[in-house]
Length: 161
Image (cartoon, rainbow, N blue to C red; front, side, top):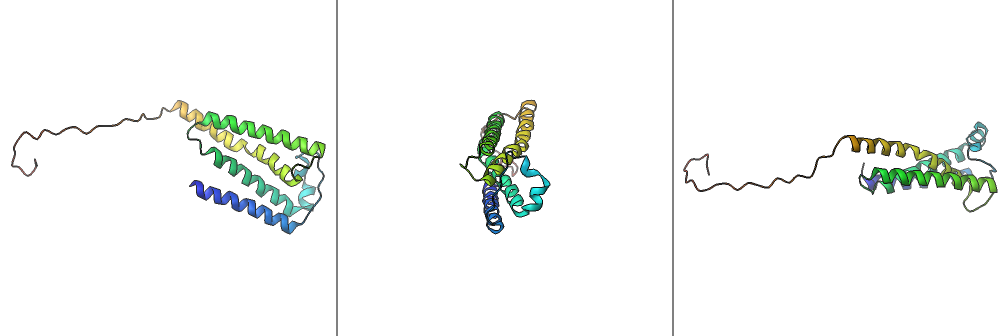
């Protein structure tokens, strides 16, 4: 799939999450851990907000994968960057929710946390791609130069121009 299409999909998902948040209205959720929000009672109480967080999470994972797709065939670097982003997003979300800091809204903090966990999917893909790249050698760039033809023979045949 072309990167422009993936970019449009990610932007559309962010816009869709914003629209869902707008129609759901402002809510005041107090959670101490991102795992608490995954409880069924929050889904029954705030279904549109739950879906908005899921859509925003998907858009964040797609966005990170899109940015990492700009690095060609450097799977080890993609694994390291994805693991770092996943780790930082998790510790950021846990600290924000545990201390009650309001740097980002709670719904964005939850989406960042779930996106960090969702980065496991591209990490697994990058691991398999790196193993494949290691085990199956890539063809080397071989350039075949054209050979010079010997035009010294004067032949009047139609087959030999």
